[in-house]
Image (cartoon, rainbow, N blue to C red):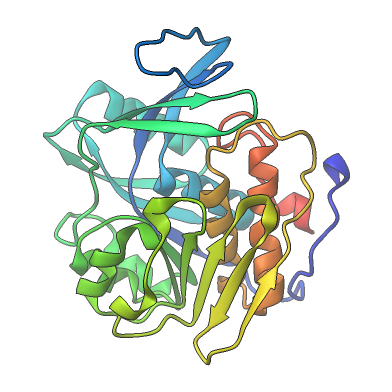
Length: 294
């Protein structure tokens, strides 16, 4: 085990491999490490900078590939140079990328990482998302163990429901309410205002609802009304960059539920994925892999 990782409970080794997929979005991110986020009218200089494809769908797809070795990412990208580059770079990170092409530009974002490791994001342009009418491999989702959803249209959500396990982000509550399908898990955040939600807007109560709270751990509630908390996992090294921590958590939970983990073990693996992510630069450098589990 690298970096002193303590192995979580894992399913029996005789279980079949877990097939995973993500239905979601991509953003081309320019990262800059700064002493502090600029105030109004202020100019700050980055001490380090880089760019790569990211966004919640992309980060989760790469994390799921690292855990399962088999992840298909259904998304949408612009026909621009950034979209082509994002497609190539994402596939180089492991997942099989099925991307519909749009005439609109691929969404960009600028992310500041301050000295505490906190990220502050400004998005540029409209988010592109896959539609069920796009000529993607939607039929494959019926043979997938677990899908994580961050974006799409209502018909895409219904297509994703063909998987044995469907997990979604609370950032798209209106979409989920309109699609009107049961979820196996819904993941939100106590810290991010965009991920706060009221579960009652859904006609089907999810089988598991999780509210993350960073290094404070988080809370959960099951579909039968049981509730509890889970602990954060100690970081395997210094906190470097919080970008992607929540997306890696959600991917870990998706994998674990697809592998039939019990809820406590699923949350521990998810928390471990989040912890490892934030101990690396950018969303991918520190992510947990299958080799770290077994």
